[in-house]
Image (cartoon, rainbow, N blue to C red; front, side):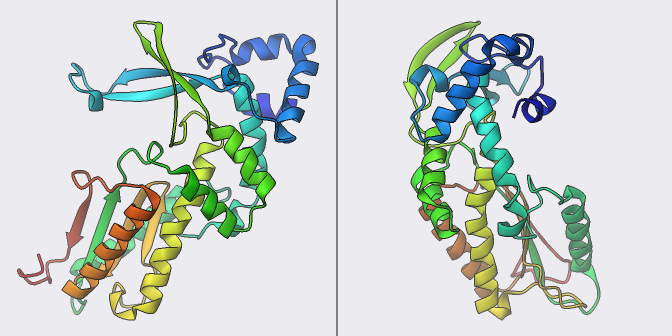
Length: 298
Protein backbone atom coordinates (compact mmCIF):
# COMPACT_ATOMS: atom_id res chain seq x y z
CA UNK A 1 0.00 0.00 0.00
CA UNK A 2 2.73 2.44 1.01
CA UNK A 3 4.80 2.15 -2.18
CA UNK A 4 1.80 2.31 -4.55
CA UNK A 5 0.36 5.38 -2.86
CA UNK A 6 3.50 7.48 -2.58
CA UNK A 7 4.66 6.62 -6.08
CA UNK A 8 1.55 8.31 -7.50
CA UNK A 9 1.07 11.08 -4.93
CA UNK A 10 2.31 14.64 -5.54
CA UNK A 11 4.59 15.31 -2.57
CA UNK A 12 4.17 19.07 -2.60
CA UNK A 13 0.42 19.22 -3.23
CA UNK A 14 -1.61 21.50 -0.95
CA UNK A 15 -2.61 20.09 2.43
CA UNK A 16 -6.21 19.59 3.52
CA UNK A 17 -7.85 21.23 6.56
CA UNK A 18 -5.78 19.14 9.01
CA UNK A 19 -2.61 20.79 7.68
CA UNK A 20 -0.75 17.50 7.08
CA UNK A 21 0.59 17.35 3.54
CA UNK A 22 1.74 14.30 1.62
CA UNK A 23 5.32 15.34 2.40
CA UNK A 24 4.57 15.05 6.13
CA UNK A 25 3.28 11.50 5.65
CA UNK A 26 6.38 10.55 3.68
CA UNK A 27 8.88 12.04 6.11
CA UNK A 28 7.13 10.74 9.24
CA UNK A 29 5.93 7.41 7.86
CA UNK A 30 8.08 5.32 10.22
CA UNK A 31 6.35 7.02 13.17
CA UNK A 32 2.74 7.16 11.96
CA UNK A 33 2.56 4.04 9.76
CA UNK A 34 0.87 1.81 12.35
CA UNK A 35 -1.83 4.38 13.14
CA UNK A 36 -2.53 4.98 9.44
CA UNK A 37 -2.80 1.24 8.74
CA UNK A 38 -5.27 0.78 11.61
CA UNK A 39 -7.39 3.64 10.26
CA UNK A 40 -7.38 2.13 6.76
CA UNK A 41 -8.33 -1.31 8.10
CA UNK A 42 -11.22 0.24 10.05
CA UNK A 43 -12.42 1.95 6.88
CA UNK A 44 -12.49 -1.32 4.93
CA UNK A 45 -14.50 -2.86 7.77
CA UNK A 46 -17.16 -0.26 6.83
CA UNK A 47 -16.52 1.88 9.91
CA UNK A 48 -17.84 5.41 9.16
CA UNK A 49 -15.14 8.06 8.87
CA UNK A 50 -15.05 10.77 11.58
CA UNK A 51 -16.27 14.22 10.54
CA UNK A 52 -12.79 15.79 10.70
CA UNK A 53 -11.40 12.90 8.60
CA UNK A 54 -13.52 13.99 5.61
CA UNK A 55 -13.32 17.74 6.21
CA UNK A 56 -12.51 19.62 3.01
CA UNK A 57 -11.41 23.17 2.22
CA UNK A 58 -12.72 24.84 -0.94
CA UNK A 59 -10.31 27.22 -2.65
CA UNK A 60 -11.86 29.56 -5.23
CA UNK A 61 -9.54 29.98 -8.21
CA UNK A 62 -10.42 32.90 -10.56
CA UNK A 63 -11.04 31.84 -14.17
CA UNK A 64 -10.95 35.44 -15.47
CA UNK A 65 -8.85 38.51 -14.71
CA UNK A 66 -11.50 40.43 -12.75
CA UNK A 67 -14.09 37.95 -11.44
CA UNK A 68 -17.45 39.49 -10.58
CA UNK A 69 -19.84 36.51 -10.26
CA UNK A 70 -19.57 33.03 -8.73
CA UNK A 71 -19.29 31.38 -12.13
CA UNK A 72 -16.02 33.29 -12.68
CA UNK A 73 -14.39 31.07 -10.04
CA UNK A 74 -13.31 27.45 -10.23
CA UNK A 75 -13.79 25.72 -6.85
CA UNK A 76 -10.96 23.35 -5.93
CA UNK A 77 -11.45 20.87 -3.08
CA UNK A 78 -8.51 20.33 -0.74
CA UNK A 79 -8.99 16.95 0.98
CA UNK A 80 -7.04 15.49 3.86
CA UNK A 81 -4.33 13.05 2.78
CA UNK A 82 -5.67 10.51 5.31
CA UNK A 83 -8.97 10.51 3.41
CA UNK A 84 -7.20 10.21 0.05
CA UNK A 85 -5.29 7.10 1.15
CA UNK A 86 -8.51 5.10 1.58
CA UNK A 87 -10.03 6.55 -1.57
CA UNK A 88 -6.89 5.82 -3.58
CA UNK A 89 -6.83 2.17 -2.53
CA UNK A 90 -10.48 1.82 -3.54
CA UNK A 91 -9.83 3.47 -6.89
CA UNK A 92 -6.86 1.19 -7.61
CA UNK A 93 -9.10 -1.84 -7.10
CA UNK A 94 -11.94 -0.34 -9.13
CA UNK A 95 -9.70 0.67 -12.04
CA UNK A 96 -8.78 -2.98 -12.70
CA UNK A 97 -12.32 -3.84 -13.79
CA UNK A 98 -13.29 -0.59 -15.54
CA UNK A 99 -12.09 -1.79 -18.99
CA UNK A 100 -14.55 -4.70 -18.71
CA UNK A 101 -17.62 -2.72 -17.63
CA UNK A 102 -17.19 0.64 -19.41
CA UNK A 103 -18.15 0.87 -23.09
CA UNK A 104 -15.32 1.40 -25.63
CA UNK A 105 -16.86 4.77 -26.54
CA UNK A 106 -15.61 6.16 -23.20
CA UNK A 107 -11.90 7.04 -23.36
CA UNK A 108 -11.57 8.95 -20.09
CA UNK A 109 -9.99 7.45 -16.95
CA UNK A 110 -10.02 3.86 -18.25
CA UNK A 111 -6.69 2.05 -18.27
CA UNK A 112 -5.34 1.06 -21.67
CA UNK A 113 -7.44 3.56 -23.62
CA UNK A 114 -6.06 6.63 -25.37
CA UNK A 115 -7.85 9.96 -25.69
CA UNK A 116 -6.35 10.29 -29.16
CA UNK A 117 -8.29 7.25 -30.41
CA UNK A 118 -11.63 8.96 -29.93
CA UNK A 119 -10.29 12.25 -31.27
CA UNK A 120 -9.12 10.63 -34.51
CA UNK A 121 -12.35 8.67 -34.91
CA UNK A 122 -14.45 11.80 -34.33
CA UNK A 123 -12.43 13.70 -36.93
CA UNK A 124 -12.94 10.95 -39.50
CA UNK A 125 -16.69 10.89 -38.93
CA UNK A 126 -17.04 14.68 -39.03
CA UNK A 127 -15.10 14.82 -42.31
CA UNK A 128 -17.87 12.77 -43.96
CA UNK A 129 -20.45 15.50 -43.30
CA UNK A 130 -19.76 17.29 -46.59
CA UNK A 131 -18.87 14.31 -48.77
CA UNK A 132 -20.84 13.85 -51.96
CA UNK A 133 -23.65 11.27 -51.97
CA UNK A 134 -23.77 11.35 -48.17
CA UNK A 135 -27.10 11.61 -46.37
CA UNK A 136 -27.98 14.55 -44.15
CA UNK A 137 -26.11 14.00 -40.89
CA UNK A 138 -25.64 15.99 -37.69
CA UNK A 139 -23.03 15.92 -34.91
CA UNK A 140 -24.00 17.07 -31.39
CA UNK A 141 -21.32 18.19 -28.96
CA UNK A 142 -22.74 18.20 -25.42
CA UNK A 143 -21.29 19.91 -22.36
CA UNK A 144 -22.56 18.93 -18.93
CA UNK A 145 -22.95 21.80 -16.47
CA UNK A 146 -21.04 21.23 -13.19
CA UNK A 147 -21.08 17.50 -13.92
CA UNK A 148 -19.33 16.34 -10.72
CA UNK A 149 -21.33 18.71 -8.50
CA UNK A 150 -24.67 17.47 -9.85
CA UNK A 151 -24.09 13.75 -9.21
CA UNK A 152 -27.07 12.32 -7.32
CA UNK A 153 -25.78 9.75 -4.86
CA UNK A 154 -28.82 7.47 -4.92
CA UNK A 155 -28.70 7.34 -8.71
CA UNK A 156 -25.01 6.38 -8.54
CA UNK A 157 -25.74 3.60 -6.03
CA UNK A 158 -28.53 2.26 -8.25
CA UNK A 159 -26.17 2.16 -11.24
CA UNK A 160 -23.55 0.33 -9.15
CA UNK A 161 -26.16 -2.26 -8.12
CA UNK A 162 -27.27 -2.76 -11.72
CA UNK A 163 -23.64 -3.39 -12.67
CA UNK A 164 -23.35 -6.10 -10.03
CA UNK A 165 -21.38 -4.38 -7.26
CA UNK A 166 -22.19 -5.90 -3.86
CA UNK A 167 -23.64 -3.97 -0.93
CA UNK A 168 -20.37 -3.90 1.03
CA UNK A 169 -18.59 -2.13 -1.83
CA UNK A 170 -21.49 0.31 -2.21
CA UNK A 171 -21.30 1.02 1.53
CA UNK A 172 -17.59 1.78 1.18
CA UNK A 173 -18.42 4.20 -1.63
CA UNK A 174 -21.05 5.82 0.61
CA UNK A 175 -18.50 6.22 3.39
CA UNK A 176 -16.17 7.91 0.89
CA UNK A 177 -18.54 10.44 -0.65
CA UNK A 178 -21.31 11.10 1.88
CA UNK A 179 -21.16 13.34 4.94
CA UNK A 180 -18.26 15.42 3.65
CA UNK A 181 -17.92 18.75 5.45
CA UNK A 182 -16.71 21.87 3.67
CA UNK A 183 -15.21 25.23 4.56
CA UNK A 184 -14.53 27.98 2.02
CA UNK A 185 -11.11 29.63 2.03
CA UNK A 186 -11.55 33.42 1.98
CA UNK A 187 -8.27 35.37 2.03
CA UNK A 188 -6.62 32.32 3.57
CA UNK A 189 -9.17 31.90 6.38
CA UNK A 190 -11.68 29.05 6.59
CA UNK A 191 -15.28 30.27 6.58
CA UNK A 192 -18.28 28.09 7.43
CA UNK A 193 -18.57 24.35 8.03
CA UNK A 194 -21.37 22.72 6.07
CA UNK A 195 -22.12 19.24 4.75
CA UNK A 196 -22.89 18.13 1.21
CA UNK A 197 -26.04 16.41 -0.05
CA UNK A 198 -24.86 15.47 -3.56
CA UNK A 199 -21.84 15.61 -5.85
CA UNK A 200 -18.30 14.25 -6.03
CA UNK A 201 -15.14 16.07 -4.94
CA UNK A 202 -12.82 16.60 -7.90
CA UNK A 203 -9.70 16.09 -5.78
CA UNK A 204 -10.93 12.73 -4.48
CA UNK A 205 -8.97 9.93 -6.25
CA UNK A 206 -12.06 7.77 -6.76
CA UNK A 207 -14.30 10.53 -8.18
CA UNK A 208 -13.34 10.14 -11.89
CA UNK A 209 -13.97 6.38 -11.80
CA UNK A 210 -17.33 6.79 -10.08
CA UNK A 211 -18.35 9.46 -12.56
CA UNK A 212 -17.66 7.39 -15.65
CA UNK A 213 -19.60 4.50 -14.08
CA UNK A 214 -22.52 6.89 -13.68
CA UNK A 215 -22.01 8.17 -17.25
CA UNK A 216 -22.16 4.57 -18.49
CA UNK A 217 -25.92 4.79 -17.95
CA UNK A 218 -26.01 7.46 -20.68
CA UNK A 219 -23.74 5.43 -22.97
CA UNK A 220 -25.81 2.26 -22.70
CA UNK A 221 -29.01 4.26 -23.08
CA UNK A 222 -27.76 5.79 -26.33
CA UNK A 223 -26.67 2.38 -27.63
CA UNK A 224 -30.10 0.95 -26.85
CA UNK A 225 -31.86 3.93 -28.46
CA UNK A 226 -29.91 3.57 -31.72
CA UNK A 227 -30.22 -0.22 -31.71
CA UNK A 228 -34.01 -0.06 -31.39
CA UNK A 229 -34.26 2.79 -33.92
CA UNK A 230 -31.94 2.01 -36.88
CA UNK A 231 -33.24 5.08 -38.72
CA UNK A 232 -31.32 7.27 -36.25
CA UNK A 233 -27.91 6.13 -37.39
CA UNK A 234 -25.23 8.40 -38.80
CA UNK A 235 -24.76 7.50 -42.47
CA UNK A 236 -21.24 6.80 -43.73
CA UNK A 237 -19.81 4.93 -46.71
CA UNK A 238 -18.63 2.08 -44.52
CA UNK A 239 -21.82 1.94 -42.49
CA UNK A 240 -20.23 2.90 -39.14
CA UNK A 241 -22.04 1.73 -36.00
CA UNK A 242 -20.57 4.54 -33.88
CA UNK A 243 -23.36 6.65 -32.38
CA UNK A 244 -21.42 8.51 -29.70
CA UNK A 245 -17.96 9.11 -28.24
CA UNK A 246 -17.12 10.51 -24.83
CA UNK A 247 -14.34 11.64 -22.54
CA UNK A 248 -15.73 11.77 -18.99
CA UNK A 249 -18.54 14.38 -19.22
CA UNK A 250 -17.76 15.57 -22.77
CA UNK A 251 -20.01 13.74 -25.25
CA UNK A 252 -20.31 13.76 -29.03
CA UNK A 253 -23.42 12.16 -30.59
CA UNK A 254 -23.58 11.18 -34.27
CA UNK A 255 -27.00 10.93 -35.91
CA UNK A 256 -28.83 11.71 -39.11
CA UNK A 257 -30.44 15.12 -39.22
CA UNK A 258 -34.09 14.21 -39.75
CA UNK A 259 -36.67 15.88 -37.54
CA UNK A 260 -37.81 12.51 -36.18
CA UNK A 261 -34.26 11.52 -35.21
CA UNK A 262 -33.64 14.86 -33.53
CA UNK A 263 -36.87 14.57 -31.55
CA UNK A 264 -36.02 11.08 -30.28
CA UNK A 265 -32.52 12.12 -29.19
CA UNK A 266 -33.81 15.25 -27.44
CA UNK A 267 -36.50 13.24 -25.64
CA UNK A 268 -33.92 10.69 -24.51
CA UNK A 269 -31.55 13.40 -23.21
CA UNK A 270 -34.42 15.10 -21.36
CA UNK A 271 -35.25 11.78 -19.70
CA UNK A 272 -31.60 11.23 -18.76
CA UNK A 273 -31.39 14.67 -17.15
CA UNK A 274 -34.53 14.05 -15.07
CA UNK A 275 -33.35 10.64 -13.87
CA UNK A 276 -29.67 11.38 -13.22
CA UNK A 277 -29.75 14.99 -12.06
CA UNK A 278 -27.23 15.96 -14.75
CA UNK A 279 -27.85 19.13 -16.77
CA UNK A 280 -26.77 19.89 -20.32
CA UNK A 281 -25.20 23.34 -20.61
CA UNK A 282 -27.02 24.68 -23.66
CA UNK A 283 -24.75 27.72 -23.87
CA UNK A 284 -21.62 25.59 -24.25
CA UNK A 285 -23.15 22.79 -26.32
CA UNK A 286 -23.25 22.92 -30.11
CA UNK A 287 -24.05 20.96 -33.25
CA UNK A 288 -22.61 20.67 -36.75
CA UNK A 289 -24.53 19.88 -39.93
CA UNK A 290 -23.13 19.28 -43.38
CA UNK A 291 -23.52 21.60 -46.36
CA UNK A 292 -25.85 19.06 -47.95
CA UNK A 293 -28.47 19.64 -45.26
CA UNK A 294 -31.49 21.59 -46.41
CA UNK A 295 -32.10 25.08 -45.06
CA UNK A 296 -35.19 23.77 -43.26
CA UNK A 297 -33.11 21.30 -41.23
CA UNK A 298 -30.42 23.90 -40.48
